[in-house]
Amino acid sequence: MNSLKRFARREPSAIAAFVILAIVAVGWMLNTPRLSISSIAIVIAQTLPLAMVACGMAVIIFGKGIDLSLGMILTITNVIIAYLSSNGMPVLLAALIALAVSLLVGSVNGVLVAYMGLPPLVITLATSSILAGVALYILPTPGGSVPKWFSNIPLLLIGPIPFSLILLIGIPLLVWYPIRRSWLGTAIMAVGEDDSSAFTSGINVRAVRASTYVLGAAFTSFGGMLMTMTSASGDPKIGVDFTMNAIAAAVIGGTLLSGGRGTIAGAVAGAVTLRLIGNLLFSLGLNGYWQYVVIGTILIAALGVPYLIGRARANSRPELRRAA
Image (cartoon, one colour):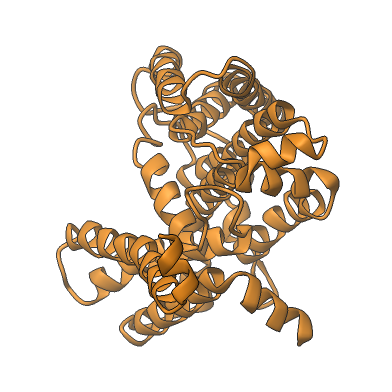
């Protein structure tokens, strides 16, 4: 209980993200006829790819970075697995190759941004363009296939518990939380909060920042694998919308775009919220285009409310007003 209170004081934005998620989830359940464990499992399975990309984006933002190539890293993972699997390669080996390619892309992004000092927006946008071309070369049109057992993994039930829910919670726990509790996790947050202070305290800022791009690529590659399970095929344009949605999910989950603050749990909550908003609007019979309006409004609120609160606190303290 005390740890939960400490978390709430330290990460109020993440708590707010879970409150928003709860409200949206209740609204969706109340407006969804014939709701069942199987239908919930399907929704979670459809959410998994975005949740993983959002986790990857959040880690990069923690280190005061940004990566516009994550959508295409998801795509290249999807295309490689579907293409190699349909041409006789064992799907697990194809997934490992796709993961290796994704880690290579993340490493290149990290080196160019952290060690060469090139602008992350430009570099990752260029990387995204290259990957888009490679994906179209490998698979010019949607196609390829994976074994049925592989595509059925997210839909499995372990008793009454959807296996997709276990994946949604388990992958971030296994990948990020050991890192967060290590020196690397502390260093990532320190670099994001103030890289000059981190440098003077002995942290290798360049190496730490580069590592966030590798971790972001790893999370996104897992998302690509899950996307391939869900779609059971490959599509060279499947990840087009993922980059912006991942940024939105991370921000809704309480990640500060200035770096050094946020949680992976919040990013997952943001991704689930985005997914349920679309389902809720569909249940209410509204046009799907309203989803973008609602998401944009929530994103503005997620960015604007903390700013207004900070301004209000500053105005309430005379010494801060005099300093301003």
